[in-house]
Length: 243
Length: 250
Image (cartoon, rainbow over all chains, first blue to last red; front, side, top):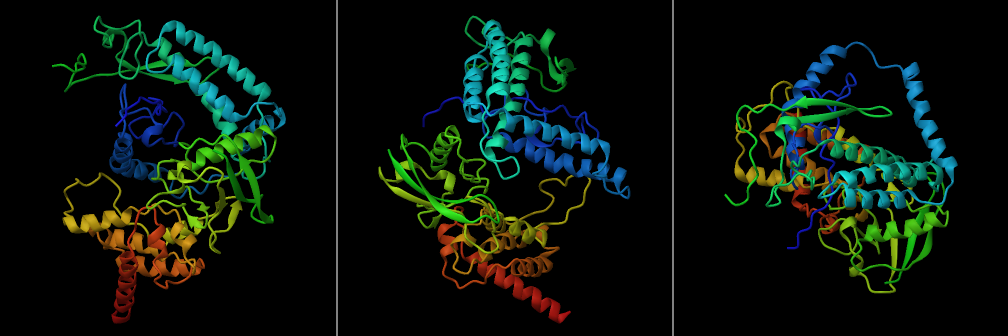
Protein backbone atom coordinates (compact mmCIF):
# COMPACT_ATOMS: atom_id res chain seq x y z
CA UNK A 1 0.00 0.00 0.00
CA UNK A 2 1.30 3.45 -0.84
CA UNK A 3 0.84 5.98 1.91
CA UNK A 4 0.93 9.73 1.46
CA UNK A 5 0.02 12.45 3.92
CA UNK A 6 -2.93 14.62 2.97
CA UNK A 7 -4.63 17.66 4.44
CA UNK A 8 -8.16 16.69 5.43
CA UNK A 9 -8.87 18.20 8.80
CA UNK A 10 -8.53 21.68 10.25
CA UNK A 11 -7.33 20.50 13.69
CA UNK A 12 -9.78 22.80 15.34
CA UNK A 13 -13.33 24.04 15.34
CA UNK A 14 -15.81 26.12 17.25
CA UNK A 15 -15.15 26.70 20.93
CA UNK A 16 -17.74 24.89 23.07
CA UNK A 17 -18.46 24.44 26.77
CA UNK A 18 -19.08 21.08 28.46
CA UNK A 19 -22.64 21.04 27.08
CA UNK A 20 -21.09 21.54 23.64
CA UNK A 21 -22.71 24.95 23.43
CA UNK A 22 -20.85 27.56 21.41
CA UNK A 23 -20.35 31.14 22.53
CA UNK A 24 -23.77 31.79 20.97
CA UNK A 25 -26.47 30.80 23.47
CA UNK A 26 -28.39 27.65 22.46
CA UNK A 27 -26.23 27.08 19.38
CA UNK A 28 -24.56 23.70 19.85
CA UNK A 29 -21.64 22.25 17.91
CA UNK A 30 -21.48 18.47 18.11
CA UNK A 31 -18.91 16.27 16.48
CA UNK A 32 -15.81 17.44 14.67
CA UNK A 33 -17.13 20.94 14.03
CA UNK A 34 -16.10 21.71 17.61
CA UNK A 35 -12.58 22.01 18.97
CA UNK A 36 -12.82 19.59 21.80
CA UNK A 37 -11.39 16.10 21.57
CA UNK A 38 -8.62 15.38 19.16
CA UNK A 39 -5.75 17.29 20.67
CA UNK A 40 -2.86 18.44 18.56
CA UNK A 41 -3.16 15.69 15.98
CA UNK A 42 -6.13 13.82 14.64
CA UNK A 43 -5.09 10.63 12.93
CA UNK A 44 -7.00 9.02 10.09
CA UNK A 45 -10.16 7.00 10.85
CA UNK A 46 -10.65 8.83 14.14
CA UNK A 47 -13.64 10.76 12.85
CA UNK A 48 -16.11 8.35 14.43
CA UNK A 49 -14.64 8.93 17.86
CA UNK A 50 -16.03 12.38 18.32
CA UNK A 51 -19.30 11.60 16.55
CA UNK A 52 -19.91 8.65 18.90
CA UNK A 53 -18.74 10.34 22.09
CA UNK A 54 -20.67 13.55 21.49
CA UNK A 55 -23.73 11.76 20.14
CA UNK A 56 -23.95 8.97 22.69
CA UNK A 57 -22.74 10.51 25.91
CA UNK A 58 -23.22 14.24 25.67
CA UNK A 59 -26.18 14.84 23.36
CA UNK A 60 -28.78 13.04 25.55
CA UNK A 61 -27.88 15.25 28.52
CA UNK A 62 -27.52 18.41 26.45
CA UNK A 63 -30.83 17.91 24.70
CA UNK A 64 -32.84 17.44 27.89
CA UNK A 65 -31.10 20.40 29.50
CA UNK A 66 -31.85 22.60 26.53
CA UNK A 67 -35.46 21.51 26.05
CA UNK A 68 -36.26 21.99 29.75
CA UNK A 69 -35.54 25.65 29.25
CA UNK A 70 -37.64 26.27 26.15
CA UNK A 71 -40.59 23.86 26.13
CA UNK A 72 -43.81 25.82 26.09
CA UNK A 73 -42.20 29.06 24.99
CA UNK A 74 -43.43 28.86 21.41
CA UNK A 75 -41.47 29.06 18.20
CA UNK A 76 -39.10 31.88 17.36
CA UNK A 77 -40.68 34.56 15.20
CA UNK A 78 -39.28 34.69 11.64
CA UNK A 79 -40.34 38.35 11.46
CA UNK A 80 -38.09 39.31 14.36
CA UNK A 81 -35.41 41.96 13.66
CA UNK A 82 -32.62 39.43 14.32
CA UNK A 83 -33.99 37.09 11.68
CA UNK A 84 -34.47 39.89 9.15
CA UNK A 85 -30.95 41.13 9.79
CA UNK A 86 -29.42 37.66 9.27
CA UNK A 87 -31.43 37.13 6.12
CA UNK A 88 -30.36 40.49 4.73
CA UNK A 89 -26.69 39.75 5.50
CA UNK A 90 -26.85 36.47 3.57
CA UNK A 91 -28.77 38.06 0.70
CA UNK A 92 -26.21 40.89 0.46
CA UNK A 93 -23.39 38.35 0.30
CA UNK A 94 -25.13 36.42 -2.47
CA UNK A 95 -25.96 39.59 -4.42
CA UNK A 96 -22.36 40.72 -4.12
CA UNK A 97 -21.02 37.44 -5.49
CA UNK A 98 -23.48 37.37 -8.38
CA UNK A 99 -22.75 40.98 -9.34
CA UNK A 100 -18.97 40.65 -9.36
CA UNK A 101 -18.98 38.87 -12.75
CA UNK A 102 -15.23 38.47 -12.85
CA UNK A 103 -13.10 35.99 -14.76
CA UNK A 104 -11.97 33.37 -12.20
CA UNK A 105 -14.09 30.44 -11.02
CA UNK A 106 -14.50 29.59 -7.31
CA UNK A 107 -12.79 26.25 -7.94
CA UNK A 108 -9.70 28.03 -9.28
CA UNK A 109 -9.50 30.09 -6.07
CA UNK A 110 -10.00 26.93 -4.02
CA UNK A 111 -7.02 25.30 -5.78
CA UNK A 112 -4.82 28.35 -5.27
CA UNK A 113 -5.74 28.52 -1.59
CA UNK A 114 -5.10 24.78 -1.18
CA UNK A 115 -1.67 24.98 -2.80
CA UNK A 116 -0.79 27.99 -0.68
CA UNK A 117 -1.70 26.24 2.57
CA UNK A 118 -0.06 22.98 1.53
CA UNK A 119 3.21 24.77 0.80
CA UNK A 120 3.34 27.12 3.78
CA UNK A 121 1.00 25.76 6.44
CA UNK A 122 1.30 22.05 5.68
CA UNK A 123 3.45 19.26 7.07
CA UNK A 124 6.12 21.68 8.21
CA UNK A 125 5.84 25.39 8.81
CA UNK A 126 8.21 28.26 9.43
CA UNK A 127 7.69 31.80 10.72
CA UNK A 128 8.77 33.27 7.37
CA UNK A 129 6.56 30.91 5.37
CA UNK A 130 3.55 31.68 7.55
CA UNK A 131 4.11 35.44 7.27
CA UNK A 132 4.25 35.05 3.50
CA UNK A 133 1.14 32.89 3.55
CA UNK A 134 -0.83 35.52 5.46
CA UNK A 135 0.15 38.18 2.91
CA UNK A 136 -0.77 35.85 0.03
CA UNK A 137 -4.12 35.01 1.61
CA UNK A 138 -4.93 38.71 2.02
CA UNK A 139 -4.08 39.22 -1.66
CA UNK A 140 -6.16 36.20 -2.66
CA UNK A 141 -9.13 37.56 -0.70
CA UNK A 142 -8.90 40.90 -2.48
CA UNK A 143 -8.59 39.14 -5.82
CA UNK A 144 -11.59 36.94 -5.04
CA UNK A 145 -13.80 39.88 -4.04
CA UNK A 146 -12.85 41.72 -7.23
CA UNK A 147 -12.72 38.95 -9.83
CA UNK A 148 -14.78 35.88 -8.90
CA UNK A 149 -17.13 34.49 -11.52
CA UNK A 150 -20.30 32.72 -10.41
CA UNK A 151 -22.31 31.27 -13.31
CA UNK A 152 -25.95 30.26 -13.06
CA UNK A 153 -28.75 31.93 -11.15
CA UNK A 154 -29.01 32.94 -7.50
CA UNK A 155 -32.62 31.80 -7.15
CA UNK A 156 -32.15 28.20 -8.35
CA UNK A 157 -30.09 25.21 -7.22
CA UNK A 158 -26.58 26.48 -7.94
CA UNK A 159 -23.49 24.60 -6.75
CA UNK A 160 -21.21 27.30 -8.18
CA UNK A 161 -22.76 29.87 -5.85
CA UNK A 162 -22.55 27.41 -2.96
CA UNK A 163 -18.88 26.81 -3.73
CA UNK A 164 -18.19 30.55 -3.99
CA UNK A 165 -19.71 31.11 -0.54
CA UNK A 166 -17.71 28.24 0.91
CA UNK A 167 -14.41 29.17 -0.69
CA UNK A 168 -14.82 32.74 0.55
CA UNK A 169 -15.24 31.28 4.06
CA UNK A 170 -12.26 28.98 3.51
CA UNK A 171 -10.12 32.04 2.77
CA UNK A 172 -10.98 33.54 6.16
CA UNK A 173 -10.51 30.17 7.87
CA UNK A 174 -7.13 29.76 6.18
CA UNK A 175 -6.03 33.15 7.49
CA UNK A 176 -7.07 32.07 10.99
CA UNK A 177 -5.18 28.78 10.75
CA UNK A 178 -2.04 30.56 9.56
CA UNK A 179 -2.36 33.17 12.29
CA UNK A 180 -2.68 30.42 14.90
CA UNK A 181 0.25 28.45 13.50
CA UNK A 182 2.37 31.61 13.49
CA UNK A 183 1.55 32.39 17.13
CA UNK A 184 2.40 28.90 18.39
CA UNK A 185 6.18 28.96 18.75
CA UNK A 186 6.62 25.25 19.31
CA UNK A 187 6.12 21.97 17.46
CA UNK A 188 3.23 19.86 18.67
CA UNK A 189 1.25 17.08 17.00
CA UNK A 190 0.37 17.98 13.42
CA UNK A 191 1.89 21.43 13.89
CA UNK A 192 5.60 21.12 13.08
CA UNK A 193 7.55 24.37 13.12
CA UNK A 194 10.98 23.79 11.61
CA UNK A 195 12.48 26.33 14.03
CA UNK A 196 11.41 24.12 16.91
CA UNK A 197 12.94 20.68 16.46
CA UNK A 198 15.41 18.55 18.31
CA UNK A 199 18.75 17.47 16.92
CA UNK A 200 17.20 14.22 15.64
CA UNK A 201 14.41 16.12 13.88
CA UNK A 202 11.71 15.32 16.43
CA UNK A 203 9.15 17.91 17.44
CA UNK A 204 10.09 20.17 20.35
CA UNK A 205 7.18 21.31 22.47
CA UNK A 206 7.25 24.27 24.81
CA UNK A 207 4.84 23.24 27.56
CA UNK A 208 5.73 26.23 29.74
CA UNK A 209 4.37 28.68 27.19
CA UNK A 210 1.98 26.69 25.00
CA UNK A 211 0.24 24.01 27.03
CA UNK A 212 -3.10 25.57 26.11
CA UNK A 213 -5.86 25.55 23.54
CA UNK A 214 -6.14 28.74 21.53
CA UNK A 215 -9.56 30.18 20.86
CA UNK A 216 -9.75 33.08 18.46
CA UNK A 217 -12.64 35.49 18.84
CA UNK A 218 -14.09 36.68 15.56
CA UNK A 219 -13.27 40.24 14.58
CA UNK A 220 -11.39 42.41 12.08
CA UNK A 221 -8.23 41.23 13.85
CA UNK A 222 -9.12 38.05 15.82
CA UNK A 223 -8.63 38.24 19.58
CA UNK A 224 -6.66 35.43 21.19
CA UNK A 225 -7.95 33.53 24.22
CA UNK A 226 -5.98 30.72 25.84
CA UNK A 227 -7.65 27.85 27.65
CA UNK A 228 -4.99 26.06 29.72
CA UNK A 229 -4.64 22.29 29.50
CA UNK A 230 -4.24 20.41 32.75
CA UNK A 231 -3.13 16.81 32.91
CA UNK A 232 -3.76 14.81 36.06
CA UNK A 233 -3.68 11.12 35.06
CA UNK A 234 -1.38 10.90 32.07
CA UNK A 235 1.23 13.52 31.38
CA UNK A 236 2.63 14.80 28.10
CA UNK A 237 5.93 13.21 27.22
CA UNK A 238 8.42 13.39 24.40
CA UNK A 239 7.25 11.37 21.41
CA UNK A 240 9.50 8.45 20.64
CA UNK A 241 9.12 5.71 18.05
CA UNK A 242 12.20 3.86 19.24
CA UNK A 243 11.65 3.09 22.92
CA UNK B 1 -8.91 10.20 -23.12
CA UNK B 2 -11.75 11.88 -24.91
CA UNK B 3 -15.31 11.22 -23.78
CA UNK B 4 -18.70 12.15 -25.18
CA UNK B 5 -21.30 12.72 -22.51
CA UNK B 6 -25.03 12.70 -23.09
CA UNK B 7 -26.36 14.35 -19.95
CA UNK B 8 -29.90 15.08 -18.80
CA UNK B 9 -30.25 18.85 -18.41
CA UNK B 10 -33.23 20.29 -16.61
CA UNK B 11 -33.05 23.80 -15.13
CA UNK B 12 -35.61 23.24 -12.39
CA UNK B 13 -38.43 21.03 -11.09
CA UNK B 14 -40.99 22.44 -13.53
CA UNK B 15 -38.66 23.18 -16.45
CA UNK B 16 -38.60 20.90 -19.50
CA UNK B 17 -35.63 18.54 -19.64
CA UNK B 18 -33.60 17.09 -22.47
CA UNK B 19 -30.33 15.32 -23.21
CA UNK B 20 -27.40 17.50 -24.18
CA UNK B 21 -24.14 16.18 -25.59
CA UNK B 22 -20.72 17.41 -24.48
CA UNK B 23 -17.28 16.48 -25.72
CA UNK B 24 -14.87 16.24 -22.78
CA UNK B 25 -11.19 16.45 -23.66
CA UNK B 26 -8.15 15.71 -21.50
CA UNK B 27 -9.85 13.06 -19.41
CA UNK B 28 -7.31 11.16 -17.34
CA UNK B 29 -8.11 7.46 -16.84
CA UNK B 30 -7.34 7.83 -13.13
CA UNK B 31 -10.10 10.42 -12.71
CA UNK B 32 -13.24 9.36 -10.96
CA UNK B 33 -16.49 9.83 -12.82
CA UNK B 34 -17.22 12.91 -10.72
CA UNK B 35 -13.70 14.30 -11.24
CA UNK B 36 -14.56 14.14 -14.91
CA UNK B 37 -17.86 15.97 -14.31
CA UNK B 38 -15.97 18.60 -12.24
CA UNK B 39 -13.52 18.93 -15.11
CA UNK B 40 -16.37 19.46 -17.59
CA UNK B 41 -18.11 21.88 -15.23
CA UNK B 42 -14.98 23.97 -14.89
CA UNK B 43 -14.81 24.38 -18.65
CA UNK B 44 -18.53 25.22 -18.76
CA UNK B 45 -18.04 27.89 -16.06
CA UNK B 46 -15.13 29.33 -18.01
CA UNK B 47 -17.44 29.64 -21.04
CA UNK B 48 -20.11 31.26 -18.83
CA UNK B 49 -22.49 28.32 -19.20
CA UNK B 50 -24.61 26.85 -16.41
CA UNK B 51 -22.77 23.90 -14.85
CA UNK B 52 -24.21 20.39 -14.51
CA UNK B 53 -25.76 19.93 -11.08
CA UNK B 54 -25.24 16.56 -9.39
CA UNK B 55 -25.43 15.32 -5.81
CA UNK B 56 -22.25 14.23 -4.05
CA UNK B 57 -20.59 14.51 -0.69
CA UNK B 58 -18.03 12.08 0.72
CA UNK B 59 -16.87 10.70 -2.63
CA UNK B 60 -15.77 7.50 -0.94
CA UNK B 61 -18.96 5.49 -1.16
CA UNK B 62 -20.20 5.83 2.40
CA UNK B 63 -22.58 8.79 2.60
CA UNK B 64 -25.41 7.88 0.19
CA UNK B 65 -25.64 11.37 -1.24
CA UNK B 66 -24.64 10.60 -4.82
CA UNK B 67 -26.44 8.60 -7.42
CA UNK B 68 -26.81 8.88 -11.17
CA UNK B 69 -27.81 6.40 -13.84
CA UNK B 70 -24.76 5.71 -16.02
CA UNK B 71 -25.48 3.93 -19.31
CA UNK B 72 -28.82 2.71 -17.99
CA UNK B 73 -27.53 1.31 -14.70
CA UNK B 74 -27.88 3.09 -11.36
CA UNK B 75 -24.38 3.85 -9.98
CA UNK B 76 -22.77 2.68 -13.22
CA UNK B 77 -21.02 -0.49 -14.29
CA UNK B 78 -19.33 -1.66 -11.08
CA UNK B 79 -20.62 -4.11 -8.48
CA UNK B 80 -21.20 -2.88 -4.94
CA UNK B 81 -20.06 0.64 -5.79
CA UNK B 82 -21.64 4.07 -5.71
CA UNK B 83 -21.48 6.57 -8.59
CA UNK B 84 -18.57 8.35 -6.91
CA UNK B 85 -16.54 5.12 -7.01
CA UNK B 86 -16.77 4.78 -10.80
CA UNK B 87 -13.51 5.58 -12.57
CA UNK B 88 -12.86 6.71 -16.13
CA UNK B 89 -10.50 3.77 -16.65
CA UNK B 90 -13.70 1.66 -16.78
CA UNK B 91 -14.60 3.26 -20.12
CA UNK B 92 -12.84 3.01 -23.50
CA UNK B 93 -11.30 6.10 -25.04
CA UNK B 94 -13.85 7.88 -27.23
CA UNK B 95 -16.81 6.32 -25.42
CA UNK B 96 -20.24 7.93 -25.40
CA UNK B 97 -21.68 7.78 -21.87
CA UNK B 98 -25.32 8.49 -21.08
CA UNK B 99 -25.97 10.09 -17.68
CA UNK B 100 -29.45 10.45 -16.21
CA UNK B 101 -31.00 11.18 -12.83
CA UNK B 102 -32.90 8.54 -10.83
CA UNK B 103 -36.26 8.04 -12.57
CA UNK B 104 -39.15 7.40 -10.19
CA UNK B 105 -42.47 9.18 -9.62
CA UNK B 106 -41.65 9.53 -5.91
CA UNK B 107 -38.28 11.18 -6.70
CA UNK B 108 -39.14 14.45 -8.51
CA UNK B 109 -36.20 16.01 -10.35
CA UNK B 110 -34.85 19.16 -8.66
CA UNK B 111 -32.26 20.10 -11.25
CA UNK B 112 -30.26 18.20 -13.91
CA UNK B 113 -29.08 15.01 -12.17
CA UNK B 114 -30.40 15.85 -8.70
CA UNK B 115 -33.65 14.31 -7.46
CA UNK B 116 -35.62 15.03 -4.30
CA UNK B 117 -35.39 11.91 -2.12
CA UNK B 118 -37.22 13.35 0.88
CA UNK B 119 -39.90 10.65 0.40
CA UNK B 120 -37.36 8.26 1.94
CA UNK B 121 -36.95 10.62 4.91
CA UNK B 122 -40.71 10.65 5.45
CA UNK B 123 -40.72 6.83 5.48
CA UNK B 124 -38.02 6.94 8.16
CA UNK B 125 -40.10 9.42 10.16
CA UNK B 126 -42.95 6.88 10.11
CA UNK B 127 -40.97 4.33 12.13
CA UNK B 128 -37.28 4.14 11.28
CA UNK B 129 -36.13 5.03 14.78
CA UNK B 130 -35.91 3.68 18.32
CA UNK B 131 -37.08 5.47 21.46
CA UNK B 132 -34.40 6.10 24.05
CA UNK B 133 -34.47 7.77 27.42
CA UNK B 134 -32.51 10.98 27.53
CA UNK B 135 -30.07 11.41 30.37
CA UNK B 136 -26.86 9.49 30.93
CA UNK B 137 -26.05 6.94 28.23
CA UNK B 138 -26.28 3.30 29.35
CA UNK B 139 -23.09 1.28 29.58
CA UNK B 140 -22.20 -0.38 26.31
CA UNK B 141 -22.62 -3.89 27.78
CA UNK B 142 -25.92 -3.18 29.57
CA UNK B 143 -28.00 -4.61 26.70
CA UNK B 144 -26.62 -7.97 25.56
CA UNK B 145 -27.03 -8.70 21.83
CA UNK B 146 -26.33 -12.16 20.42
CA UNK B 147 -23.57 -12.18 17.82
CA UNK B 148 -25.75 -13.46 14.91
CA UNK B 149 -28.36 -10.77 15.67
CA UNK B 150 -25.72 -8.08 15.79
CA UNK B 151 -24.33 -9.27 12.45
CA UNK B 152 -27.78 -9.39 10.80
CA UNK B 153 -28.61 -5.92 12.07
CA UNK B 154 -25.28 -4.56 10.95
CA UNK B 155 -25.58 -6.03 7.45
CA UNK B 156 -28.98 -4.36 7.04
CA UNK B 157 -27.75 -1.13 8.61
CA UNK B 158 -25.21 -0.87 5.79
CA UNK B 159 -27.99 0.71 3.69
CA UNK B 160 -26.99 4.31 2.89
CA UNK B 161 -30.39 5.32 1.56
CA UNK B 162 -29.13 6.33 -1.88
CA UNK B 163 -32.30 5.21 -3.69
CA UNK B 164 -30.63 3.10 -6.40
CA UNK B 165 -33.03 0.25 -5.54
CA UNK B 166 -35.97 2.50 -6.40
CA UNK B 167 -34.32 3.84 -9.54
CA UNK B 168 -33.69 0.41 -11.04
CA UNK B 169 -37.05 -1.15 -10.09
CA UNK B 170 -39.67 -1.41 -12.82
CA UNK B 171 -42.28 -0.65 -10.14
CA UNK B 172 -40.19 2.10 -8.54
CA UNK B 173 -40.55 0.16 -5.30
CA UNK B 174 -38.75 1.10 -2.10
CA UNK B 175 -39.11 -2.37 -0.57
CA UNK B 176 -35.37 -3.04 -0.32
CA UNK B 177 -34.82 0.28 1.45
CA UNK B 178 -37.70 -0.28 3.90
CA UNK B 179 -36.70 -3.94 4.29
CA UNK B 180 -33.18 -2.91 5.27
CA UNK B 181 -34.41 -0.42 7.88
CA UNK B 182 -37.00 -2.80 9.36
CA UNK B 183 -34.54 -5.72 9.44
CA UNK B 184 -31.88 -3.56 11.09
CA UNK B 185 -34.09 -2.40 13.95
CA UNK B 186 -36.20 -5.55 14.40
CA UNK B 187 -33.01 -7.60 14.88
CA UNK B 188 -31.95 -5.64 17.96
CA UNK B 189 -33.47 -5.53 21.45
CA UNK B 190 -33.45 -1.72 21.32
CA UNK B 191 -35.79 -1.89 18.32
CA UNK B 192 -38.36 -4.27 19.83
CA UNK B 193 -40.50 -1.60 21.52
CA UNK B 194 -41.84 -0.13 18.27
CA UNK B 195 -41.40 -3.32 16.24
CA UNK B 196 -45.03 -3.77 15.12
CA UNK B 197 -45.83 -0.06 14.77
CA UNK B 198 -42.68 0.40 12.74
CA UNK B 199 -43.54 -2.26 10.16
CA UNK B 200 -47.08 -0.95 9.73
CA UNK B 201 -46.10 2.73 9.75
CA UNK B 202 -43.24 2.43 7.28
CA UNK B 203 -45.21 0.29 4.83
CA UNK B 204 -48.15 2.73 4.99
CA UNK B 205 -45.80 5.67 4.44
CA UNK B 206 -44.13 3.87 1.53
CA UNK B 207 -47.48 3.38 -0.17
CA UNK B 208 -48.62 6.93 0.58
CA UNK B 209 -45.45 8.23 -1.10
CA UNK B 210 -46.38 6.38 -4.30
CA UNK B 211 -43.65 3.74 -4.32
CA UNK B 212 -44.72 0.54 -6.08
CA UNK B 213 -44.93 -3.02 -4.83
CA UNK B 214 -42.37 -5.79 -5.23
CA UNK B 215 -42.37 -8.32 -8.10
CA UNK B 216 -39.29 -10.14 -6.81
CA UNK B 217 -37.09 -9.47 -9.86
CA UNK B 218 -34.11 -8.84 -7.58
CA UNK B 219 -32.84 -5.89 -9.65
CA UNK B 220 -32.62 -3.78 -6.46
CA UNK B 221 -30.21 -6.13 -4.70
CA UNK B 222 -28.19 -6.36 -7.94
CA UNK B 223 -27.45 -2.62 -8.10
CA UNK B 224 -27.34 -1.95 -4.35
CA UNK B 225 -23.93 -0.44 -3.57
CA UNK B 226 -24.04 -2.00 -0.11
CA UNK B 227 -25.28 -5.42 -1.32
CA UNK B 228 -28.38 -5.39 0.90
CA UNK B 229 -29.77 -8.90 0.35
CA UNK B 230 -33.24 -9.64 -1.03
CA UNK B 231 -33.97 -11.54 2.21
CA UNK B 232 -34.55 -8.17 3.92
CA UNK B 233 -37.73 -7.89 1.81
CA UNK B 234 -38.83 -11.31 3.09
CA UNK B 235 -38.13 -10.06 6.61
CA UNK B 236 -40.21 -6.94 5.92
CA UNK B 237 -43.11 -9.13 4.70
CA UNK B 238 -42.78 -11.23 7.86
CA UNK B 239 -42.69 -8.21 10.17
CA UNK B 240 -45.67 -6.64 8.39
CA UNK B 241 -47.74 -9.84 8.54
CA UNK B 242 -46.81 -10.35 12.19
CA UNK B 243 -47.88 -6.80 13.03
CA UNK B 244 -51.21 -7.21 11.22
CA UNK B 245 -51.88 -10.49 13.03
CA UNK B 246 -51.04 -8.94 16.40
CA UNK B 247 -53.38 -6.08 15.70
CA UNK B 248 -56.12 -8.56 14.69
CA UNK B 249 -55.66 -10.67 17.83
CA UNK B 250 -55.76 -7.63 20.08
